Structures are given as structure tokens and as C-alpha cells.
Image (cartoon, rainbow, N blue to C red; front, side):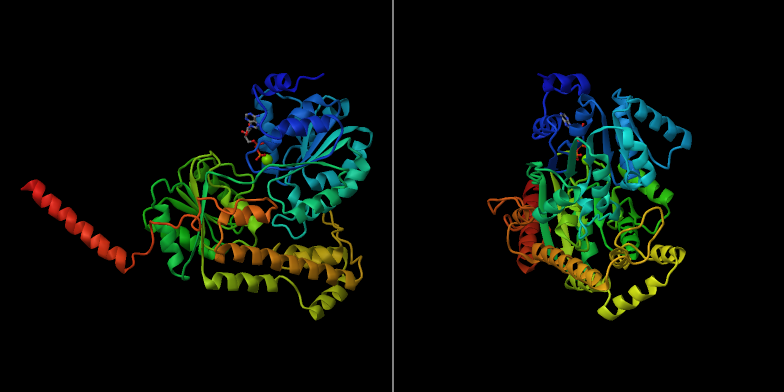
Amino acid sequence: MLDLEECLRYYFGTDSFRPGQRSAIEAILAGRDVLALWPTGAGKSLVYQMAAQLLPYLTLIVTPLVSLMFDQVRRLQAKGFDNAACLTSAQSREYNTQVLEAMRSGYLKTLFLTPERLNSDEFLVRLRDTPISLLTIDEAHCICQWGHDFRPEYLRLGKAIQVLQPRSILALTATATPAAQEQIACLLGLRHPLRLHLSLNRPNLEYSVKEVSRLEGREIALQHLYRREGLPAVVYINQRQECETTARYFCENGLRAAYYHAGMRPDERQAVQKSFLDDELQVITATTAFGMGVDKPNVRQVIHLTPSNSLEEYYQESGRAGRDGQEAHCLLLYSQQSFERAWGQLDERYPSAELLSDIYEALFSCTPAELRAHYLSLSPTSWRQTLNAILGFEHSNGELQPPQKPLENVSAYLNYLYSTDCQRLQAMQNYARGQRCRRSLLLEYFGEQTPGFCDKCDVCRPPTTLQPPDIRTRLWQKMYSLADSLTFRTASA
Ligand code: ADP
Ligand code: MG
């Protein structure tokens, strides 16, 4: 019988498993599928890293970001695992060939790759004679169409799985509602998976929400940044322009701040991210483009100056605070207008029935090259979803096929996406405007049971500091300063 603790010490130099790790590894070794919903930092990677060393054949890990892959391989190699590698187009052709050779010879145990590569026919053919012990899908929530990180390529993984026939599948995520968990299990074709759920509660995070007027948001954010232990901080804003002006405002007020959004060149973005990680910057103002794969342990505050589109997003973004386990604060500042704008943007994302049928007709007469041009001209948040729906996600390597599905199906599908988007935004609004414990609301959204009280949010424990001074506090301040000056006089007398 394998002594897993001994293996843990041998491979990772650690003495004990974290909750869930042992059960997950045991299930995988026994050939079961596993669906793990564990919060960020719980130690999901160790499960497949260790299983990969113990299983006889290859372990594949699908990750959505190339930067995440490089990071993981670098860490594994630093620990002495030279049988780990990744395949990306960012590496030279020669290097990738070597990786494939190592895979074929059976030396390679751990291979990271993007869903695009795994889905490609070329790669599936190469893998035909390679037995797969474990297929890991990291960030598995990317498979949910209505999800915040939806990646159409994740949807096609089901097909690749049928071809590859891995012995076990391990699906990992840190944010999935009960409905999303079902979708993950169904689309990946998990067979009676062992479901391992750890609480998503982050006890060191304090949650609070404030309704502000549109103009006052920044100023209040600034006050919070100047709190003791308020830095470093991330300030989320969903408009690029606002992101830039807010960073400037913080700089004018004595903070080292910079902005980050998808409209910048990749090298500019990387430079900003690096200075923030290195603590040269105190504040980063960012759109949702910032965060995935960024692991900065000492973020003391995450402030939202505009609400997220869903609680999944809010949980992920606010959860970037306090990774080191030290106290940290998550503040949502919202105005009446910010939700109105969010609802407006949601409506704009979906076409009317007439427009939909016009697009549909037009696409029928397009050549693949024209389709591709149309597709690339769309921003991910606008009409790409519509086009994805019409084209049935049957696009890869830029080869787009004309519409495959009847218009009624497309329209029903878009209606479904629209209504789930509405529910998600509504949940975010309920969080902001609700009078219930914030933590409970968040956790219940992900299907957890809670006592309904946490003693660490603005509802359970109304704030005593940083309220805009009302007449009573001003009076108190006057009396205090009077008392101070009296003491001073007596002392000097
Ligand atoms: P997740 O993917 O769940 O967000 P990671 O896998 O990146 O989390 O792990 C977070 C950190 O915890 C890593 O630094 C990892 O080395 C550490 N870790 C994981 N499991 C253990 C363990 N059993 N003992 C000690 N440290 C661990
Ligand atoms: Mg992870």
C-alpha cells in the first residue's frame, strides 16, 4: 500500500496534506473522476502534480493562460521535476518537438497546454497512441457559457475527452454556483465524480458596501487607501477611461498609482503588473482584465468603484485581497447610475430578434475569410457571444464555418444567455443593496450553508470610522479638541 504522506515528503518536502488533497489523490489513483470546488490558495495544483508522479502514464493539464503554464512549469522544474513541460506557440518549434518526443518516449509525466491545442485535430492524432492517466481541467468554470471567464474552446473539451479516453478527469475551480458545477460535470462527461467542496469562506477578509454619488466614489476610495494598512490595493473600475483618470487622481493625491486595462500594449501592461508585484506601485486601478493568474499575497484592499456583473466576478476580484492570510478589506462603492449603466450594457450585448435574423442571413452568404474578419472586429464583451451562438462554436484556428444551427435554436440559446446574465447582475445588485450579512450572501450564492452572521462585514458590524462626518460627529470633534486644548493648558501651566 502506497504511503501518501511519505510520497508527499519525498516529492514536495511537506509533512501534511491540506484538506481535501489526500481524498482527491486517492480517488484519482483509484481511477475516479473528481470535481473540486476549492477556494484560491487551497492547494489545487498539488493534487495533479503529485498524482502525475504516482500514475503510470501521462497527466495533461489544461489551463486558460499561457502565463499560468510557464509559472507552473518553472516552479515544478525548480523543485527538481524535469519531467514537467508545457506546449505553447510562444516556445520554439524545436523545443516543442523535444517536448513531444519526451511525451512519446514516456519520460514526460506532466504536460500543460491550452484548450485550443488539446482540441486541435493535429494534436489529438499525435496523442492517439499515448495513454493518458489523468486529464486535469484547471479553472473549469471557463466552460460555462454564462460564466465570467467563458472560453468557447472549453466547450469543445468534451469531444477531445471522448477521443483521448483518459483514465480519470480532475476538474478544478474556485468559483462555481451549483448550476455551474452541474454544467461542468455534464459537459466534461464526468462519471460519478467525487465531489470535493471546501468552504469558499475567506475568514481574513472583511466586506463592506457603500452607496455613493457618482462623484464622491473616488474621494471615498482615497480615504480608504489612506487607512492604516490600506496598501497595496487594487481598485476595479469597468471603464478604461475612468481607470486612467482615477489613477491620475490618486497620484495627484500622493499615492504611487498606475492603471491597467486591455487597451494597453502587452508590454505596458506587463510593466505595470511587475511594478505592482514588486511593491513599487501602491495602487493599481484596473478593469476586469487584471487579475487572473496574478498572485500577489499582500494586497490589503480591493475596492470596486463600479459593481461587477456577477457575484462570481466579485468573489474572484475581491478575493485577490489577503492571499497571505492577513487581514484585508473588500469594499464595494456603487452609485445608482452604476447599476443603471450595467443593465444598459447588458441589453446592448444582445441583438433584437430582427437584427439577429439579419445577421444570421448575412453570415450565410459570407466566405470563411469574411467571417473571420467580422469575428475579429467584435470585442469579446459585445457581439462575439452572438456570433459564437450562431456559428455553434465550431471555430478553431481561425477557420470559421457558416451557420450550422437553425435560427430558432440560436435565438433560444441567446435568450437563455440573456436571462442568466440578468440573474447574475441581479444577484450582484442584491448583494450591494441587501441588508443581510455580506459574507453569508456571497457564500450562499455558491451553495454553502451559513449561520447568516459573520461579525466581519458592514451589516454585522456597522462601521464606526470613515463615515462622512455628520453633525453629531462634528460636535464630538469640537468637544474633543476643546478637551485637548484644556488638557494642554493644564499641562503647560
Ligand atoms: P490554488 O491553485 O488552489 O489556488 P495552489 O495550488 O497555487 O493553490 O497552492 C497555493 C500554495 O499552497 C502554494 O504555494 C503551494 O505550494 C502551497 N501548498 C499546497 N499544498 C500544500 C501542503 N500540503 N503543504 C504546504 N503547502 C502547500
Ligand atoms: Mg490554481
